[in-house]
Amino acid sequence: MSVLTIKIENKTDVSLVDLTLSLLNVGAQYNRFLDREGINTEDIKNPLVVKKLESGSVIIELSSIILPIINEINTVFEFACYLKNSVDFFLGKIPKSPIKYDKKDLEQINAIVNLTANSPDSQMSFCANNGSAQTVNLVINYTEANATQQLLRWYQTRFDNRSAFGDKAIVENISPKPIRVIFAHEDIKRNIINTSNFSKPWQELAYIVDLEVLFLDEKPRTYKILNFYPEGTFNPDED
Image 1: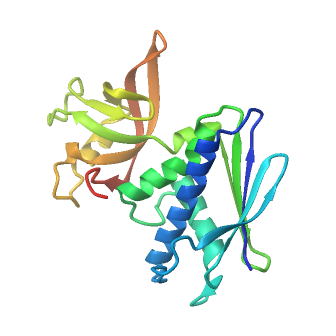
Image 2 (image 1 turned 45 degrees about the vertical axis):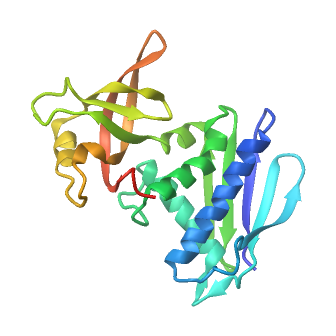
Image 3 (image 1 turned 30 degrees about the vertical axis):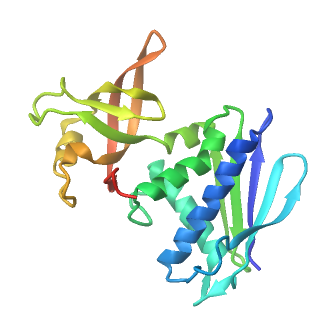
């Protein structure tokens, strides 16, 4: 049986609330993964269960109580691959997202990595194998965890592509306030404006971007958008 091993290395104590929320959202994302694969879990509210806990660093082994291999899919291994590809996409390591994310997917992935994002000395790793020579390993440190959380929502915009002085945005994990936005090059804003697969206006959508935060007196004053990932765009009002 394939097992997903999660290891959390912290020099300080791990918050029980953060740990619980992280694991709950691992389970929630596994349920959504199974649903996308057409695997019925209506009668199983929690198909991913804790198999073993180890002392020292927090080491948790999770296994599936449904058949581990369905329709030639090793569900736990493929789910681990999905998690790795998602994080790699948010970090800009791969150009294409593994799925079309919705708001709930992004909230759940955000909650999974939030445990590491809250602690500068922490690291979280996921490991699974497919029963043969293939192994997937995902390691998320503090910097990477924070980088995956940069979901940008527009607050105020100007439609004049020649001017950026009116552009403001909210990045909720940095500041609840709208902050002035500048672009590394004008093509980024042009590509965002040309987002056309939604019924909502482009300035009411949410985006995944590579972001540089410019501070003044230890407060964020300007967001500089370095890159834009069109496939991560979503409607923030949809579940």
